[in-house]
Image (cartoon, rainbow, N blue to C red):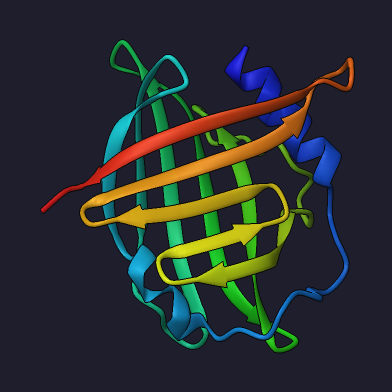
Length: 155
């Protein structure tokens, strides 16, 4: 079920044009950096986000269940046209891509504040050593679906 939701999310957002969100710079998102670990999607999940270099924060997401890799994401928070957008590519356990070779899923920034960033379909919120990602989607029947992932900072 979780995989269907994520595939629908990727397809519904699709490749987007250049970012057109509120003014922002990558330095405002430094609070996201770290190695985050938790549960979700029926198993274990991890999110690794590196500090910014050249206007980009590169990251990786991993989902596993019962010791078996389910899928991964490679992503980047990147400055674009005076704002920041989240760009994502998804991969199966064998590293085959969900998206076509030149495509990626783009989430424009909607709003941001202290320890909070809302992109078009994903919101990140940090509280101390805890990070939450809320993914919003509609299923095939048009019913809103919200997926919440909670992580703890690994030190």
